[in-house]
Amino acid sequence: MDDALRYAGQRVIVSGAAAGIGAAVVGILVDLGAEVHAIAAEEPAAAGVASRTACDPHDPDRIGAAVARIGSVVNALFVCDAGARSLVEAVIPHMVHGSAIAWVAEGSEADALSAFTEEQAPTLALRGIRCNGVDRGRIASTEPTPSDAPAWLLVLLNCRRAGAATGLRISGATMPARAPSEPGALTSEPLD
Image (cartoon, rainbow, N blue to C red; front, side, top):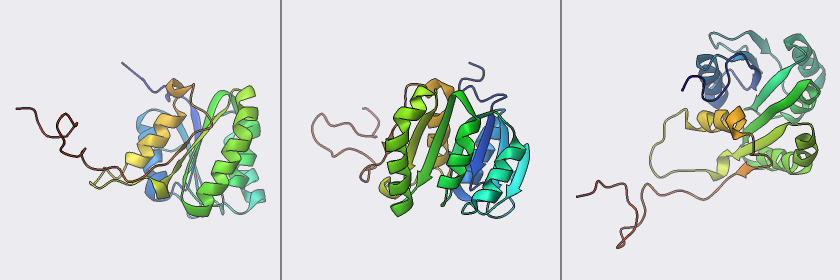
């Protein structure tokens, strides 16, 4: 199935795009054919992006100017850094019906973005904009996961195929590598 996630030709903004999860999101979206605009406190080094902006996420004026340069239509916003509220508020007026916001954060930043999501998701939904997030501090695994796993989670949350998902904060306790070895329990062991 070609373009199953429907990112080809979509204009997206990724904050925190210089490193970590944000850089991984940029790489995935470029590979999926999106028009990616990278914003970070430092100059993003991502290849294949439509634009790169070095911008302090705590400076609403610079954020507003960066968003204005990107254009009047935004299909998805990926928030991968602290101080994102200014960015979210600057981008929302440019978002079209069917667009989405996905954030990843931890600690007090996750609490603030979660409160924003809970408060704004119903109003945004009336405009056809979805908003979901991942509390990175509450998601863990006892076995190593690929370094781009959190990035893929954000990409999946914002894809057009996830059109029914809004107002979510994904968080949870540590997930075991496999279920306990009890009769009938599911495990990752091969069947005999």
